[in-house]
Length: 436
Ligand code: 5AD
Ligand code: SF4
Image (cartoon, rainbow, N blue to C red):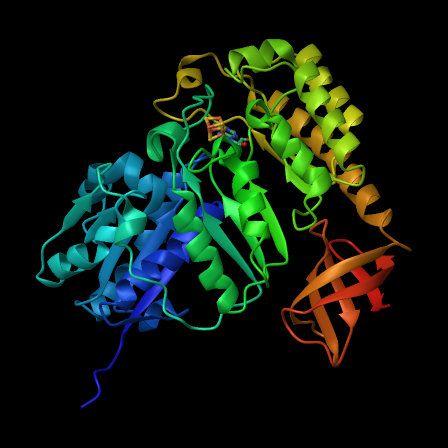
């Protein structure tokens, strides 16, 4: 008799690392007979893979959990778990506040999911938020050989030792750890065999990677030798780890895409210092200049925080002028929110009104820059990696080298194909183009 698969509903919040982690969790539970479902009502297990980076994250998790109450009432065998960074930060507290939860697992322990699942099946509750000695990647089930889409994430480094004064990551993800290069290369080869053409290397501090010779640049050059792997990206980087070989690789490695996410957070030296960023605005601008010397068309993306404790109008004006000087093609900006346990949480907060006002002004500038960068593509030829059919008949959608979404009429095109495309139009969030 065929065993009926149990169903797993997995909801992912936050960064791309969580997307990667969720895939690995689904695989780990696949070994226990679980298949994923996108309907919580059908699930035998619900897992929330949470993010703790900004405000109200934990509250969102509690309210989401509350919504599952009726499901558990209808189906008493339903198991509910919380994973990710909120799990790491609040483990026991979640168990205390929300009796519905059977399982709490931190980001460094999800390779133990099979044992934890067995435990909750016996009716016990399980909390696992240690930073174990063993490498979770070694203990994860090998990925099943199923076909994959053309793009994939691959975690190469985790954790952070930088301790920016606002950030919970060093506490939730722990110290910086790099995976050995051989393992990454093996995983990349496997992904390529399964149809992947573009890999984005992930790490909280990806350019601090030191798991093989030559750091991240060395790893990129090794990966570039894999036949069939056409594109390499990486995220997220810290300015202080943009070393010479990495800047150079942007100019010389064809497979490394001309796009870089390089957060600066603020343009004021006083605030950068208070944030413990350990670089000045000038040093950041110099890196941008060198990147553009290496690769003039590189598209830059950034993260910004407004209203960090102590930020004055003059400090904010410095951020606006840095943004003006760089010209970002993409960006993410946030109001500072005090995170419990971080040094800045103890400092006096800027008023909510000032934060709102500054965020609005900054975003107006960033959106205008983003739009200008996108509009400047019109008339140019780009290469698009086709990912999925578009909404219109015969249309295909994918990303350009610069990570712009592009839609093209290409009835004969296949997913995974890279096509030369002339950009013909620029809309709110995507470009239109035609095959060359
Ligand atoms: N408040 C606001 N934004 C934050 N970020 C990280 N911590 C905070 C915080 N406490 C932002 C930073 C970081 C991005 C991932 O999230 O800009 O680069
Ligand atoms: Fe957080 Fe700073 Fe580390 Fe980035 S570099 S993860 S912002 S502490």
